[in-house]
Amino acid sequence: MSKNPLNLSELRVQIAQYISVNDAIACAQVCRDWADDFTAKVWSNIDFKVHTAFKKLDPQVIRKNGHLIRVINNLEDGGDVDVLQCSTVSNLRTLKLVMLPISRFQAHCCDIIRRNNSSLTYIDLSVTHEDHNNELFFAVDQFAPSAITKATSQLTTLKIQGLTLTRDAFSSLLLSCLALEALSVQDIYFCSVLLPCLYQHPRIKRLYASITQVLKPSSKSPDAPSLLVHFPALQIWNISESPIHEVSPEDIKHEVSRYCPNLMAIYPKTPAHQTVVLLRFVFDRLKGVCISYENVSPELIMAIITHRETLEHIRTTLPYPGHGPDELPEVDNSHQDPNWTIQMIPQLCFNLTSIHLYRYEIKMDEVDRTNWTCSRLASLRIRIRDLDTKEKIDRVIRMWVDGRRKSLMDLGDDQNDRSIETRVAKFLLKFDQLTSVWLGTKVYSV
Image (cartoon, rainbow, N blue to C red; front, side):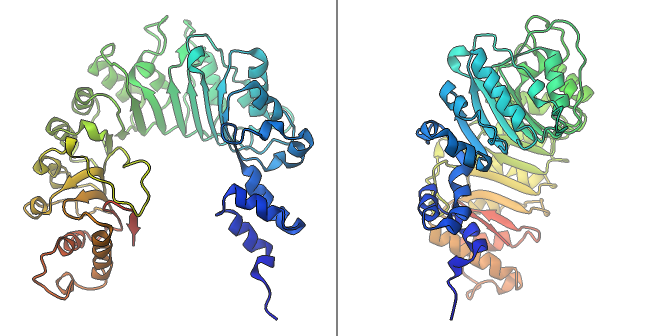
């Protein structure tokens, strides 16, 4: 007699990863064994904006299942914080909260962080817009190792916004989070004027912050050291939008070269003319650049090409939010510059391994007239004119995959085939190391 595969606990656990919370609730009500396997799915992710009834649950229920909670989103109300005071809520991995200028609320938030210090890997901590102008001091002792368990912070990503910190507290925060790799610092007010102990974090590789925030961290102390002194291992700087007229390009260049010798990529959200200045006069020998699609211009492309000897990754901001992998969104032609300008990048930047120009459309006629020198290209994300249906894209991918198994000359039944699909497939096959392609729908990998 064959057994029902759903009787296997291992299979039910796998299924639970792919079903909705409502389906998991229904499955958990089948029997005790099923409840053991599906309850974790029900409790793993709590969003207080979505799960508004959570705070009305019996405290006994939360105490029984609190250990299953892994993600807390939109914690921004006193009632929300109160229900999480249960000691079993101690295995969080992700916490997103909005601090209120209320001492009791802040104390409870700090307790939640302290209790989950050894499991949290991601924290997003900000203040409400209404409280942004208030001095909301942030205590950092909850990140310190527990005096009882000696467990240290496992935090790898931290986002803080709108808080007030002394520079000493900022150094202490970094010192307490030794596993930290990515840090976002937005609208932080540094209130100290005395020269503090400036801790240099050995692992932070990615920084999200504006130039003004980094180079002018304290309005009360304009000569205070820049935040870059804390990040000797920095490799990627996501530069958020802010006016940079207060800081000269020479000063930025000096601080970067002095404190962050390993910086190799910038992702600026600055206006177009400021991005050109950063690329041409501030940063040298970059390996990676991400730019806003709306900023693409001949001037910007020429600024990118100044890094042609070292550039390995070029990308524009991510594509078309809200579109599924089988949808082909329309191309926005309002920012399409002449094809010859954008194609100067793969022509002249011979070390490129990834080109991710999601919302940019190129013409195969222009491609055929140029020579892409990036022979090590491994990942390509781009739109191609006339490759405008999912069926055409699927055919290109099939021909590309098949072509990798045979010689280029054997591609297609008709060697005179000049269809857009054949032309694109033959173009892709010129790159022996190309293994990942996106042409408008989803990413295909071989």
